[in-house]
Image 1 (tube, rainbow, N blue to C red):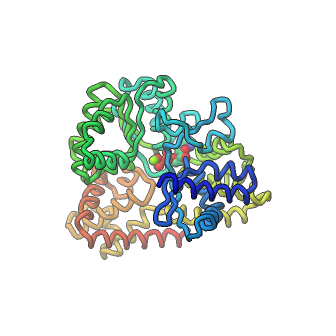
Image 2 (cartoon, rainbow, N blue to C red):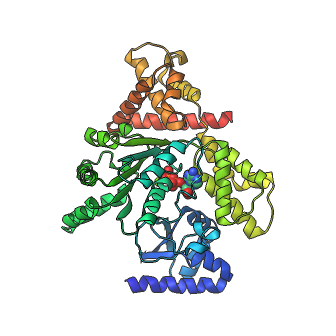
Image 3 (cartoon, rainbow, N blue to C red):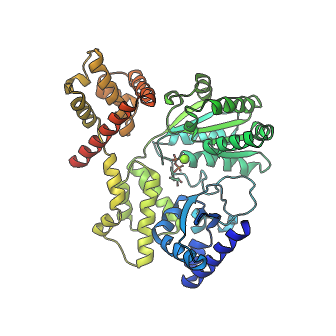
Length: 453
Ligand code: ADP
Ligand code: MG
């Protein structure tokens, strides 16, 4: 099977090598790894998001065609990122284009992505506390903060920061057992261990780590058995005085369906939050990525991109890649209107997210047929209190605002908002009708936010 999949992929590569310019082939195709080739679907893997978006935009049809030619079948392609594909760039070659480019594989010593370092992480007000805490943990593992719990919305740098800790520790001590894993991969490994009767091995592996970096821990929510297993892993590592770092898309206390004993453990050490970066930080991040990718892009254009994309750094990078690929493929410069056209989907996504609390309050009040003023009133009857809690929950989920800011908008304190969010989240697990209502409200709110743009 293995041979078969490689053979087909190799042939497709040869075909592409003949049709594409050499540098393009080497830069974009030779780095792809074929994971499997089953049921007419090729699973192809690259080492980071840059590659994924670039390939999707430019080379996927060509690759599909090449596979079709060599196999004589109509092949589907599933392109994914495996952050554990590591770079083989020698130190001296790093710095320019190499460091963001993924990589062919070398024997894995750690499964860390070498590009996620403190060097490549831009510090600004939105992340400086999290950054400082990460540096401290990296310099004195298990002594500074244990566990370190990093939370924040998607695309704000959690994985990057966590891997930077791992890379730093690994660079000081290559014999240390540093392990990065996502909570999902950890769960799958556990299930496999159960099925193959290798639980003892699984436990030994994780419980004897020097540094365990476990990404997207929110995945544990609602999974009791996994929580039990992780509880023991956590205790073992902690008792050995080894470092644990976790990330989550929200604070531990807000994860519904997480056992209190885990919540309390997650808060034992230091909890830090990554927030949306301000405009200066966004520009600095774009400049840094340009350096790393060896791109020259007009400063005004960078500013224009940074100004319009604010909620997600991954999206910001995606926009940069789009612009860079346009310039490199067409050899043409870009003016504002071309840029706007090129980034229209991304800009739309951003607009949809630009929702303010008042819009949410209005939509919810309308839906439940109460007065807008009831959103901030002291009245407590359930027919008013409940819509208010729903609005608080949607405000937290649909805007980038912090609890205190949302609290102010409702004339309530931070704890009331946290409570409302937990309540609504909990109820919707069992209540289909509520889920439908929330989905309807989200649609209406996004729609009216777009209209007011
Ligand atoms: P998360 O895990 O929070 O969803 P990631 O760590 O995957 O986010 O970050 C998304 C992308 O944004 C990555 O490519 C990462 O390198 C980049 N990124 C995030 N924050 C920064 C930063 N402060 N400086 C440079 N790049 C950043
Ligand atoms: Mg992540």
